[in-house]
Length: 448
Image (tube, rainbow, N blue to C red; front, side, top):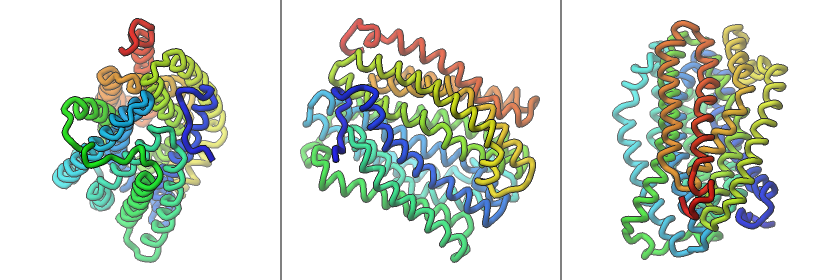
């Protein structure tokens, strides 16, 4: 079976789909880490414990987003080296990425040890659930290096066109995660801390499996001792690209953290409904997020190979896909949103079911600007742009701050519902302008 796809030569739609499908399935199983926690906690421990996980979900998403962003950013530099056929630079890029990932993991672990509990208080977390919330998120952050390791290793494999093996390893660890959730909660009575421990163990196994595969099968990614020598320019490029994507994701998640403070003020049942809706929402947006992730690697490799027309054709395909998925998702949400919320949460409370369903129904039509902005932002990063994608994230952060301070106090939970669709539309307009005026895309230079 062909595990590597040539994104610079194979037919565009076929190569994008073949590359994206394993990533999509991987993302589904990645999301199962959280959704399994939500379902098992909701069905076995009740709405209060479900709200405890929900109250710190924004913090967890911030960590996941930063780790995923840094991993993807570092792998984009590797992908450009691979597309250009420069194996020496590729191996040096991998070596530098490993060093950067280790340093960032240690830094985040130390910072989180100090700031987590005060942050939960700052977010207006109800006293009834704050200790449970802390027990969950503190366990996750203690082992944040595990999260970074998997995202980096899978990103490196994706960079050389192999999106299949990370999927295999993630399926194995996801099944293990669900099994451990049941054991730790129902047999060992560890509460939601048990779900956090299960997640760490499962992610650790997927990281180890990825690392072993790279060492034994993907020799092109295995650096030598000489490759770890300090290269100022390469470190600057990797740090710039990795931190740019990491901070971009972190800024987006910071806006969600600010929004979470407003949501926490509505009480346990609203938190539980919103938490459930966000979990289900993550599955709904997964096709868009996956296609955009595939697009970033596609653009990186084709930029390295200097194939501008393939990049333009891929973007057009991405726009059409966003429109198609928005139509499908809207129909599904109108018909089944309330049933989905009930299934995931295990709740019969009308506040939980109604608020969660309304969130999903209102958001689905706006998957059009969401999909377009994700494709454009990831493509700009694939071209080596660092600042413009950050600007789009700052727009999102400012928008969420404005909604949290101005509109949500007036509109209530409906303000939470319409917050992101409004912001997505504004971000999409900025990125459309930025992408199509990019010098490389306009054909004014070989390298923008």
